[in-house]
Length: 166
Image (cartoon, rainbow, N blue to C red; front, side, top):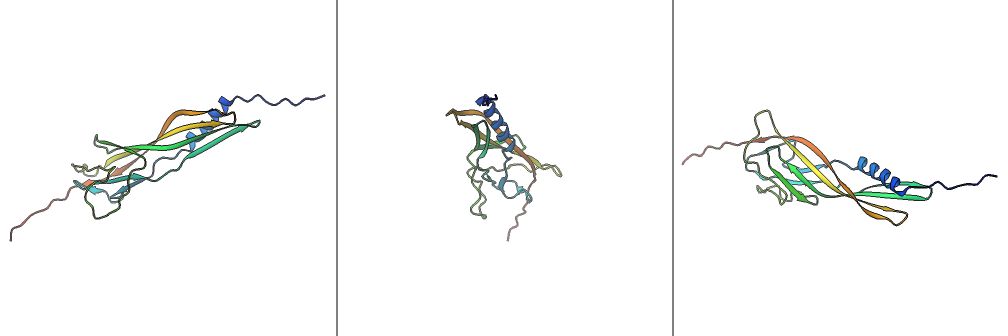
């Protein structure tokens, strides 16, 4: 006679598995910077910084009727401007609304020196995520947060003007 014995499920292992999947699937930030990276910018012209909303990353692992779900939710981002300056922003930042403005945005920055010729600044944007879990057994809580980064070139030039008297 055979008797089916349900497998012993370690909910902690399910949490670990769901966490690993969520960490692997969490995206790098997609910058929304103005002036755009393809154009670069100029000394004393304010930048507007934001990132596209990545939405939550959710992963679930189950076995024998038990499951664990892990969710990574974007909370903030930091920008390293490649010259030693950094800005930290809550949420997703603020995309530019008025293309005629010369001032930096609420989550912006203004370069005071041009980048070296043929050597653009390296901007690094790092998104930080809060990570939480829930299980079929009613357990829930927070896990160690995670971060994702992207680095790109950003050229800053200087415009020279000459004044004349009439």
